[in-house]
Image (cartoon, rainbow, N blue to C red; front, side):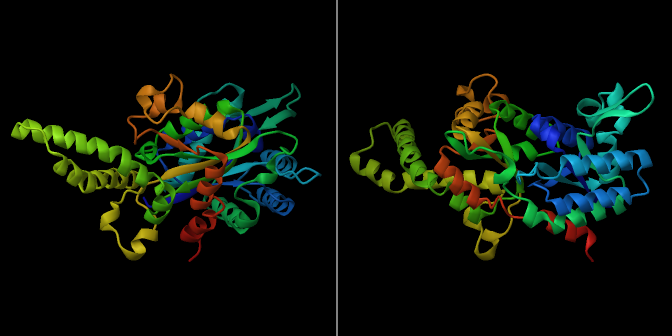
Length: 387
């Protein structure tokens, strides 16, 4: 069976309740599909109107659900009168039988009555009165019922992706708060080795911050991006690790030859071995984040997409940098506090689950490097549906 592309739209209510991580965990671990794109939208009135029209025109949706869903989208997705948009997170998944797998994992609307084995059973509501009228409806997520519907919805949202998507500065009113910041989080490639609940579980921990998630992107970091992102670390590694490498080398030489190394030997090692060892460790970081060994890559290959995936997230709110870093924990997972991201999911100093900006200034720099505003939805739509 050939691969399919499917989508999930996480509703404003689910985002407000910080249930995004739980939803993502269920989608990845239950379907076994690859998450290939993520983008935050603040749907405009025109996008909302046309999406509701697609729902009303979809004969594969029950008439009652058509009415409920279209009204829900028009009510919950449209911006407020003062222009504040509501956040909707689009996730794209790729794999065999992707559309049906997503439908099965999301579940039907009546699952919310007493079932918890689907996303809607856990996070949605479909409550009826004794006369069978619907008194409360919250679908938690929206999903394409078939290939034709997926094509129509993705075609529509890709049309609006640049204008309505990216980092949603107008998705909240923060002007009256002090110390408002943005910060970048990268959920690192070790969490995407195979489809698992890890990325969503990490998001769940970050949700304790009380911050708003205003941007999301799946990234295959290029070597050029990695070099710009981690470049400031290279001289630090040369200095700190270089000295350690020389000390270890001198001890090894003493053990082998039975005498102390003279100052001339130490100075020669400091000029040669030290920087080389620091560079080797730096290339190791680059390889971990891109799946490529930098010295082997030349020319245009350096700007091409990397071989591994990570997920980039932008959070905003008061003291965002400090709040996120407190939840993240120190670089060395062995020194992190219980319940922190790196203690729960990290392995060592490099494979430590996630990155977070260390200052508001660095956050803006890093957000620019990973191109958080860049649209990736249209590219995936064109790949599958434009001949």
